[in-house]
Length: 315
Image 1 (tube, rainbow, N blue to C red):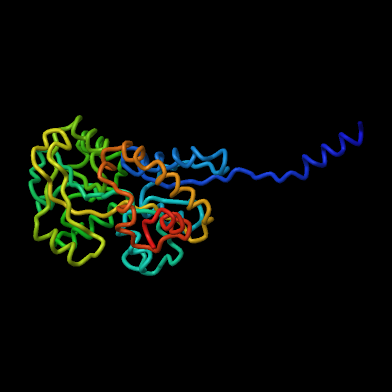
Image 2 (image 1 turned 90 degrees about the vertical axis):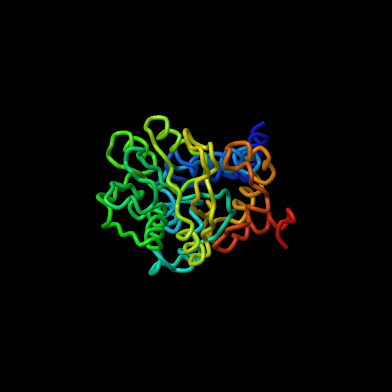
């Protein structure tokens, strides 16, 4: 009996144990699009957790630049980042002029984001140049939101010093800052519709300001990662017209060093549940599996490449 017990104990001790692996996706403010997008991705990844031993969680962050920097430092496994910021980081340009990130890898482009100027109706802002002398929120200091806004300023002859105040509230603070008369308007790079702007429109009389076509033409000609777009009429309360603007893609990125099997499983989880994924938010409605590969400005991670090849989406 004692020998049987010993054999059983040896068998248990010699059985390989595969501990769970935890991965984290850096997103953005909880009222924006990055946070629910990260949550949706994790939900699908966690459907496979019994077999894969991979557990996925999301972290609310300050957005694109924060996600990139913490990814670079090994504090995050994945991050959602604007494609213009991905481009600059991978090329060593803009905010990354002296901090090129050669190990940055794309996983997939998700949905289009459009730079949006939300203003109080009584602020007398009807076009972009009207923000001069006003209190305008540009986003967290050093964020992707601020970076894109300042690029727009450069193309349209506006300087931060032209503003009465250049505020730096985070995305979740913007609607209340408008409501409490701390600012006259704010810029927000986001997919539409978004709870953030719905909250602002439901608590304050607001309007969304279109950008002039000559400014948009100048931007997309100069910067290959920008495209013209519009916010469809009726998206928000009292919005009767399409709003002309420009945008980028929200891209899921990772580090070259992240395990190939982990990245493969994440892509597999989304692609095998793609129809369900598209139903999670109106901004995903026009996504196609092919569009997940459009707007990538850093090389594909090997794990992502492997699954996309198996799915016949790339050769």
